[in-house]
Every structure is written in structure tokens, then in C-alpha cells.
Image (cartoon, rainbow over all chains, first blue to last red; front, side, top):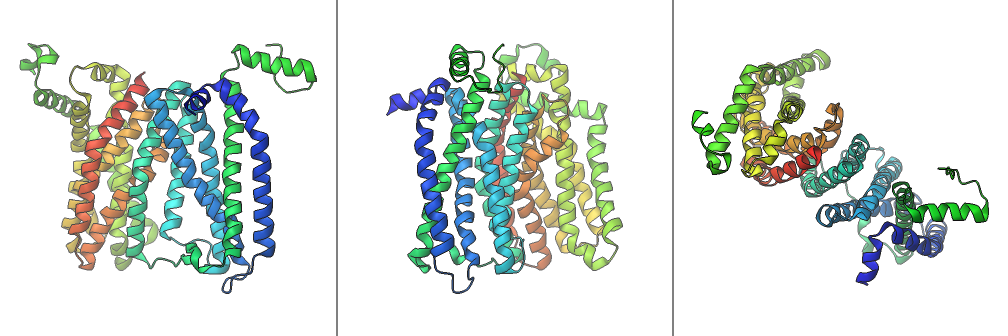
Length: 260
Length: 235
């Protein structure tokens, strides 16, 4: 187990293990998403209040989960980079940041689309909406900081510090927004999250899409990390062997300058 | 200053070094008065823009006054952050600070305290004047000053983290805003909450206590993040 974790810390091993895991991940994720979406959108009973509108939950709630999960993943990687100086941790943190930002955006957009038929407005200054918007800004800030710093090492460490500062601040922001919301307006009733009130035909497909989204997250993580590994290690022998060997065998146009 | 030069820096007491840091920052600020005047002028001008854009209706202005004062003060503090490390970074003083045998944590606290004295205190003193120009009700004045007194140090400390991360970059103004404005939200929420509660006649001491908690948290943790960030930026 530890041996395996230790190997993941080396970019070369991450790359090869990623290649081995990806086909399994693709098939399991595809199965989960196909079953979850067809069941959820086609066969689950309509809600007695919202009719078919509630079905956006199969997209909305998994996206919300990814928002949180991505940030915790980035925080873990940041700590690993600052404490143990594992360079793979930075590659993963960099790979996850845009996924988290996109998940947050997807959650906000799907929430807005859901809001129009149910609340009558696409946006309200609800505590959960507002703190998700702020979370999106924090993701954007981390991505912006990384693209602004030229030195890769400095950018990695600076982003790690900012991520950890964000980690400390997120609960404070959420609490303050919740408090602010109760002062200014009544909290909107989001009791849909209470799954016990809903029949299993509604929430079981949500589990399928939820795990499907987690699968998509890891597929994105592995693919983006592998790209970053190839870019960073492009001068190392194993990458040259890998790319040149493949090209020689398959004789495909890969877009990578093999004459370099 | 004369008493300091006779001994090697490592033998000096912590308080005298902090005192010397504050004296140095004050001296620099008064020889370069733009650092004091510009945040203040920004604050005054930006507040003036509001009646010009939303109209001079007394009821409406008094309703938005706490928010306008707080948001404008927050932006003024953020824009003032550039003078915290920029000049020291360019002339090499920041490296001296990092190599000092004294604990960096306390040196940074002294530096940030001086910055707060120079950039934030004048804003706090002028805030009641501008608040009354916006017809804010008088019950809100003392809570406004108290909330700014507790809140602006937190803004300065958080801004210090952002500034330390971006000091190595040539044009970092907008980036700094993107990095730290989301982190400013709790201070803004509780700060305006104090003033609103006082104007509505409800108890606001609990909210002040929450601001004080944020202050304590920021004073104890931010210097650690700032020193880590400075070491990365200086490299």
C-alpha cells in the first residue's frame, strides 16, 4: 500500500499507473453515468410539487460535491508540496484547479436553470448560492496567481500557500454569509436535500450520477496530470523513449516535434 | 537609533527591534507623504462618487451609508497594500528583513502595524465625517468607528498575504484584488452588520466580538502565511 503511494509520487510511475487505470475508470464511469442519467431522467417518478424540474438534481448535486472535493484535494496536495516537497502534488493541484472551477460554475448555472421554474428567479442572494460564488472566485484567484508567476517552483509554492489560506477562510466565509443571509432575508427552503422525504427511485439514480461524476473527476485529474507530466519531463529520457518509440511504431502524427 | 548601532542585531531585545522597525516605517511614511494621503484621498473621492451616481435622496443615502463607507474603506485598504512591501522589495530591504536574526513573525507584525497606522487610521478618523455627509443616523457613528478599528487590521493582515505572494510581479494590482477580495467578505459582513444593528437599535456587541475573533485569528496566523509567502517571492 505505502509502496504504491510512494510510486505515485514519481511522475513516471504516475503516468504509467494512470494509463493502466484509465480504461477501467472510463468503463465504470460510463456505465454509472449512462445508468444514472437514463434512470434519473427517464424512469424516476416526477416530483409532486416540481414535476420534472427536479431532475436537474442529477447534475446539480454531484457538481456541488465536486466543488468541495476538488478544493480539499488541492489543499491536501498543497500541504504535501509544502511539507514533503513532492512535485507530483503540485502537478495534481494544478490539474484539479480548473476542474473545481468548472464544477462550481456548472453547479451555479444548473442551480440558476433550476431556480427559474421553482423559485421564479434565476438568482437569489441565498447563503448557499453566495458562498458558492465566492468559492468560484477563490478557484479563479488560485488559477490567476499560477498563470501570473513565471517561475514554476515559485508559482507552485505560492499557489499552495494561497490554497491553504483559502482552506482556513472558507468555513469563516460560509459562516459569515449564512449569518448575513439570515439578517437580510429569510433563508430559502432547500429541503430537497433531505433525501428521506423522497422515494428511493429518486435518490438512487443520484448515487449513480454522483459516483459517475467522481469518476469523471479522476479521469480529468489523470489526463490533465499526464499532460503536465509530459510537459515538465519533456527533457527526460523516459518521455523521449515513450514518445519517439510510439511514433516509430505507429507512425502517427502526434503534433509533437520529434526532431527536437 | 543611536543606541541600536552599538550592538550586533542578534543581541537586541525583541521590543527594541520592533520599536525600531515602527520608527523606520513612520519616518519613511512622513518623508513620502503620498503613502498617507493617497489612500485617504481615494476614500474621500470614492465615497463622493456615490451621491453623484445614485442621487441625493436622504433616505436612500442613509440606508446605503454603512455599506458604502465599509466597501470604500475596504477598497482603500486593499489599494494601499502596494506600499507595504513594494519599496522594500525593490531596494533589497526585504531580503535584509528575511535574513534578520530576529523572529520574522514579530518584525512583520511591527511592519503591518506601522502600515495600519499610516494607511488605515486616517481613514477611520475621517469615516464619521463622510458617514454624516451620507446622512447616516448618529447612533451608527461609534459602532462604525469601532468596527473599522477591529476590521481594518484584519484587512491589512490578509492583504499582506496577497501582497507577499505577488510582490515579485511587476503589475500585481488587479491580481491582488482577485486573490484577496473573496477573503475580505467575512470582515465586510460583520463590519456592516455591526453598524446596521446599531442603527436598527438591536444589540451589536456580539458582532463586535465576532470581529474581534477574526482580528485575533488574523494576528496570530497571517504573519506565518506572510513570511512563508515572502520567502517564496524572494526565493
